[in-house]
Structures are given as structure tokens and as C-alpha cells.
Amino acid sequence: MSELLPTTNADGLPVIPMTEEQKYVFDLKGWICLPGLLTEEQLAPVREHQMKFLYERDSLPAEEQNNHGGVSQILLDNPAVVGVLNEIISHQRLASEDCYGFRFDHTYTSHRQAGHDNFNPHGGGGFFSFGGSSHYYQMQPEKIHAGLVRVVWELNEVEKKDGATMFLSGSHKAAFPRPKSLSGRESDLWETYACPAGSVAIFTESLCHTGTQWVNEERDRLSLFTCYNTVNAKWGKGCPAPEVIEAMAPKRRTLFRGVWHGMNEGEKINRYYDGANHAV
Image (tube, rainbow, N blue to C red; front, top):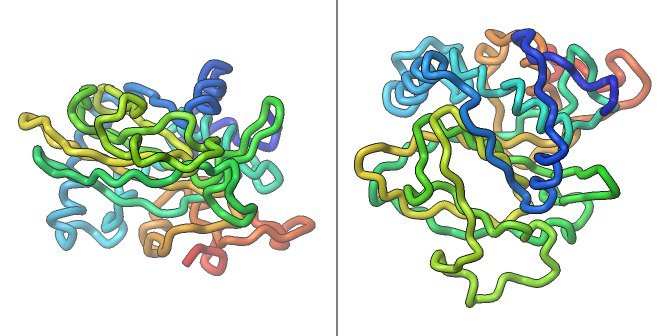
């Protein structure tokens, strides 16, 4: 791993690098689950913020009127998440100890109750996507670039049969289109996960994935679906308001810098965030 990659997050916590096993599993399946990254003490205010953001947004200060505003900003660069993104998507030339080599792309909060269904398989075959696509999965011996990456924060516990995100593991490198016989949710090829609250599932958007029906009547699903991209590419529209970003620590702000690369050094290369260099 390059010495340019940050070793701490915006809160000064040590970044947790991927293990060799995690790298292998992610490349093999196209996704991994990291359980229990947050304590209940950390989770409680995040849950409260997410529910207010969804249903009482005007009651929040301007700098908290965003999925990742206020206390929820700690989800953006959790040390374990940074460790994964450093490995699978970071543009090392645009990273430093003060700046991430990847950027925020877009996000949404999902609050699902029993009976809610969003089965809609999409993605797959990203290894064969055209070069300009954010869904382009690349690899060479002992190195991958996962393209657009989704980090799903599960803020409540998830059991295997509850109805969390499902994956057609390995399909990010599939050479054939998905046959109709495997398009239904009853296929044995679909995989999912169980995890305690405060866990993340991380997957390449090149992978075929889908939501499904949430069936747990005692516990809602409350999740944050955040995408990250390479520094000089953007897939989703929009960016948090300036007052939301300005309330963050300086290193965290670099997740929202403008979508360009540059050359040489200083302000000619995109390793900084300021009022003139932010995504739109």
C-alpha cells in the first residue's frame, strides 16, 4: 500500500487496513460484510439524527439537514471503511495524510417496515463495462479497482431472513447475461448477510444486487446507502450544502472536493477542498 494513503481518519483514529482474507473474498464475491463497527453509544444519536432527517428535517440546524450531517458524519470515514476504500478505489496520486484518495458520490437513507418490497435485480458484468463507466471493475495480479462502491450502514440488527440486500456473488465478473431462470428471488445463488447493528456491507456496484421484501415485524430496517467513487468521476447528482460540509473536520471535507484530477502540484492537483473546489 502506498505511503501516500492516509493512516488516520478525520477524527485521528487509525485506519484499519483490509486483511488478505477480506481482499480475496471481496474480489471473489464482489462484496463483504464488516460486523459491529459502532457501539450502541455511537449508534443511538445516529439513529435519532436519521429519523429526524427523514421525518422532521426542519427541526434540525442547517448544518445537520443532510444524511451525513451532525453526528452521522462519523459514518463517512469510519476507520474500517477507509481501510477498504484505500484498497479498492483510492486514487493514490490524489491521496495524502490530509486528503482521501476517493470521494463521496451520493447517498440515501432507507427506512423499511415489514411488508415493504423493492426487489429489482440490477448490475453485473462490470469487468466488461466500457472504460468510462463508473461501474467498471478492473483487476490485475494482487490489485483491484472496484469502480463505484456502495457502503451500506445497518443501523439496526439484521437477521439472515429479514430481507436485507441480496447479491449474486461473483456476477461483477460474469461474461454471460443473467438468464431468466435465475432472475427470481427464489434462486439459490442469491446471498445475503446477518449482522449486529452498526455493521456495514460493502460492494462494488458492478455486482448484480437487489433489495427484497423486509419481513421482520418487530424491527424496522434503517440503513444508509452511501456511494464512493474515484476522485475524477461522479455518478450521482448533487452534493451536501456548503454549511453541512463546513461543519466537518478538514480531512472529511476532502470527500466533497470537485470532480477533476489536474497535474503538477499545489492547486493544480486535486488534493484539497475549499469554497471554490467542491462538487456540484
